[in-house]
Length: 280
Image (cartoon, rainbow, N blue to C red):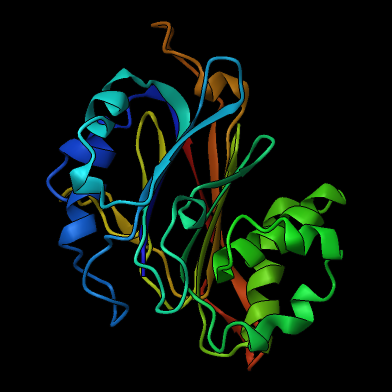
């Protein structure tokens, strides 16, 4: 059921996370370790997004398996960014296999990915869909559960809602409408990364340079920590934490990472609470 990886921090190349690490996103496309019954490979397309020098996202997506794309590894080597997201897709049976269905999805400076499935699609979430204007439904990126989730979320964001709160609320809303759904959502923009762990695998790592999230750790560094099921992870970074290092010492601003429980409509909160800060 798809894999994704994201980074926020000082500019770096995504090549290691996407291609070069022992268990990179490339390896996870054909040999994932923790799909939890949601398929065996992620061969229904892939996508990359990153923040360019002008502050806006750039995206590269294809509907073919990642291992068949000869251009992508070299492309990754040319990128250096303070924020990037990569995803590989295992399409739910009955949903289209095309480029528009592949994460990441974009809107303005927002980047979105969904790892999982909405149970009972599409009938189960018809109530959520009917709250959107008809024109927005007609403009869905693809006829998939992920595209609908993104349409609902970006509508709420456009109304000025708090990003982290709305990501958590969307998980609760979908769980109420479609119990048992897998809802690992990822939302990013310059200076912010928000993700959920909801009945699917997610890990995080804080390093001297920044913060990472991954469906599966891409190397054996013991600094990786499993994100508790039912959790919302939010990372925020001041501009100074996303600049190229200048050799100065004593930087006291860092990336703030918090983990909180998401309200479970079936019976109270799940997950845990806590926070940590890394200096970059």
